[in-house]
Amino acid sequence: MNHGDDELYRRVIASTAANAHSGRVRWAPGKSLWWFGMLLGWAVLGSLYFSWGAVLAFLATAGATLCLGHSLGMHRKLIHQGFACPLWLEMILVYLGTLVGLGGPFTMMRTHDLRDWAQRQPKCHDFFSHGRGILTDWWWQLHCDLILRHPPDYRHPDRVARNRFYQFIEKTFMWQQLPLALVLYQIGGIGWVAWAVCGRVTVSIFGHWLIGYFAHNRGHRDWHVQGAAVQGHNVRFCGLITFGECWHNNHHAFPGSAKLGLYPGQCDPGWHVLQLLGFLGLATDFRTPEDLPDRAELSRI
Image 1 (cartoon, one colour):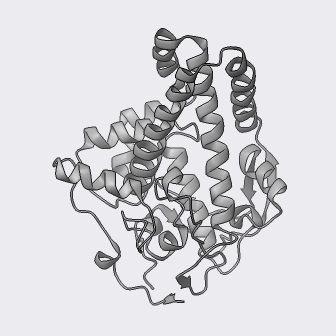
Image 2 (cartoon, one colour):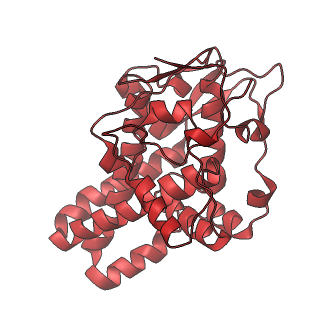
């Protein structure tokens, strides 16, 4: 059976004993304090040193890190290999993705792949499916980890695992906010740091969770994946602010596609940026649904 993204099944190595539903949710102090610390810094310093320039810095840095970094660098390129580009450009995009504040490249790949693997099983833990109430899910996703009793093994691709730059930013992903903070401080002072670092990280992590919650619980669907415990949903009217990542039903159907907004009215700014990179000769080999193998388990609704 073709799962639409064979690379995933070379990274997640599941024995017959592995299961996606048996485990316990445990508070992760570092993860929790990271988000609360950023929130506190934004709330206090962002109020004391408010300026419209700081707000503009917040919008500019959020747009760059979420679109170029998270959507293109981490998700469409590093994880799904939806397009090709020079290694130097990939590393810049992945670095911008690290600045989002969710984790370094190894963490992002492993977290994404294990969730995808679990959601494609006949049954998975509510942590993977966002299957509890919204407040419980907020606590779980932003402040806890799931410890599976029988997890699969995981292996990063050699080209990623051996990349020293990726190793470095993985180990120091929280500290990578400091160079940006120093630049922002020199330009606009504490207020710019509070908004464009603390505020941006706070909103990016919270927004990533919130879109993920709705994208796995309710919304429009064009496709159904037979045998999967979790279906993706399209979160309408969020295409612009998510840079196309909200079209999650499309992504569940065609995970290897670099284009996420597939139908009229589905705004996908990330795809338009990729087209620009292609025009400039910096990106090639874009994969779209037409380029992917047929999936026997995929049916049109």
